[in-house]
Length: 150
Image (cartoon, rainbow, N blue to C red; front, side, top):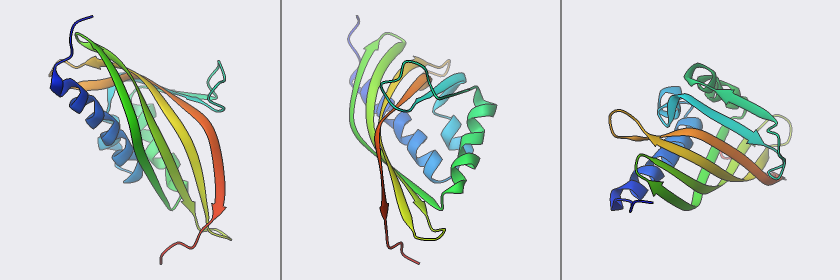
């Protein structure tokens, strides 16, 4: 394995931040900019399941995720621990996330997902890092009543 340049970890973290900001802002262009055109997202819920509950692949299909998540009034993806292993123009990583999903219908609720993203990355032709495959491992969830601001 070759040594990673110091900026590789910063750039890989920026990929996770584009993903989270894109989904929270319902900005499909920002969201898909985190992925290669043939990128794949596999949701494992529960996280220890061998087979994904849902798979979305390619920019056009990934773009629909910002529309699908709009069923929630707001979302808030808070990124935590991140670890990356770089080998030349490919890398793997794991990023922790606590994702809040606000619903105001009836009693206002916050559906919280505790997630680990297990990623495979490749450098794009322009030298930037992008996700080639993301496994979304939902470790557990919680739902609580909340008092949202107007």
